[in-house]
Image (cartoon, rainbow, N blue to C red):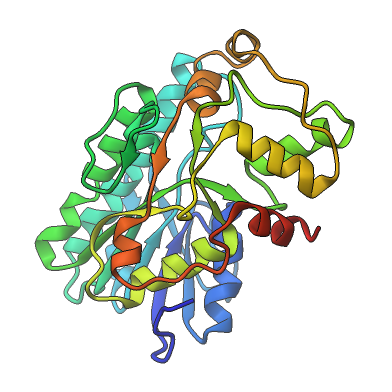
Length: 307
């Protein structure tokens, strides 16, 4: 909510059909910015769209001239199913190959954009227990940490042309429209909600409204560059999160889901998405003066769920 929205920009957005992208497009338009989508299907006549094929390495660079900022959100959904070797390959390649292609294309332009805002995830830090994690903290271990590390490195090609790089390490996005939160609601609403595992693992989250503001803030704040933790300033344990969600829904949160059940049902995906701990703080956003609309979990959940 502290981004400078006074100057209209011409912004290119990838991943516009996803949870964040589908909300970002109208958000930017409301603030008078011109938005063009970079899409993988052939553009409709008259649409503000440009075609690309990241898997095939196809992108017409002549169509990328004249943008002030690029917001790169595209990537395979990591929580759509168990992580088979084939699926893990798709998750990695959808991020690394597409980001590298786009970054190289932007670096080759006669008039490069001023900023490229790329996304990553707090999975970069791996399972770190109670350790407080800032942007300077090193990468963790495991599949997600490796994906995020390579994902971030693949944007480096844009740096050589003077494009300001911003990489948002995004936490769990709170939205009733999609992502993890709607999947949690059903068991709670039937009285079967509760902590996952022992509940001591930290969850770092961000309300969707705040994430949209952060993206625009990153586009408009020249001092902000490099890795930026896009999380609210109140990470909480899974136990606190589930108790808070139960209170907001006015439902009990007393039936735990044991760790062995998570591993049995979801395999490696469950281990890294549900049982890992990442206590992440938004140090660079705070230093840059960003103010959150929803810094506290209960108020954020009530807003998102209109409770």
